[in-house]
Image 1 (cartoon, rainbow, N blue to C red):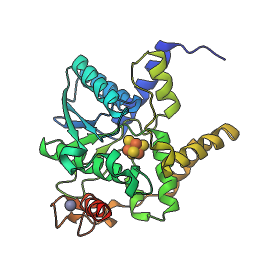
Image 2: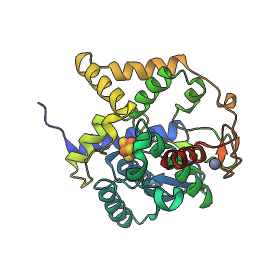
Image 3: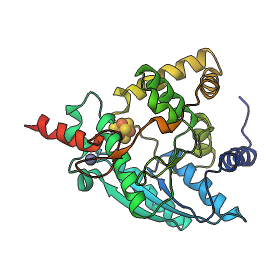
Length: 287
Ligand code: SF4
Ligand SMILES: [Zn+2]
C-alpha cells in the first residue's frame, strides 16, 4: 500500500474544490453563503474549503454563516453539534442551531416508526428548515456537503423512481426558481467520498464517524452499499455513471414549477409543501 503524502493530498483536494467553485461560479462577490453543517466529514470539509477560499480570494468578498439542524436522534446528532460549535469558533464563523422539535414539533426518534424509512421525514424537514433559515438571514446560496458519491446515489434513486423533474437538481449550482427558494451549491460535487474520508483521517480531524442508526434501512443506504460493491468489482463504475449522466441529461429546471404552500407559505411544487404533508401524516398516524 502506498503512503499518502499529506501536504500533496491536501493541496490537490483543496485545489480541485476551488477549481470547481471558480469553473461553475458558485460564489459571487458580496454573497452570503449559508452552509448546512452537520459536523460530519463532508460538511466540515466544505466549511474548511469555503473558509480557505474566502481568506485567499483577492477578487471576491463573501460571508459564511453555518446552520446546524438537530433532528432529534439520540446518541448521534449531539456529537456532531458539539463539533460544529468547536469548528465554527476556531474559524470565526457564526453558527445558528435549529431543531426539528422546535421547528416542526417532532423529533425523528418519536416519529420514525410511521414511515418506511426515517430518512423520508428527516430529509423533508431538514430541507425545509435549512431553506427557511437561510432565507430569513438573507443568504444568497446554501452550500451543502454533498459529495460525488451522494450525487451518484441520488441519480440512481431518481432514475428508479422515474422522477424526471428532479434531474435538474443534479448540478453544482441550482437555479433560482422561486423568490423564497435559496439556490444550492455543492462544492464537493466532484470530490469522492473516499477522498473526503482520507482527508479527515490524515489530518486527524476530530469529527464523529458514527453512522446514523437509521441509515442502513434507507434506499440511499442500500444504493450506497450496491455502488460500493460494484466499484470494488469493477473500478471506475461510479465515475462512469457520473460521466454518463452529465453527457445524457441537460434538463432545464424551468420545467419544474414552484409556487407557495397554501398552509405555511413556503416554496412548494404542489398546493401543500412536503413538510406540511409530512406533519399531517404524522398527526393522523398518531391517532
Ligand atoms: S441517515 Fe436518514 S435519518 Fe439519519 S440523519 Fe440521515 S436522513 Fe436523517
Ligand atoms: Zn407548507
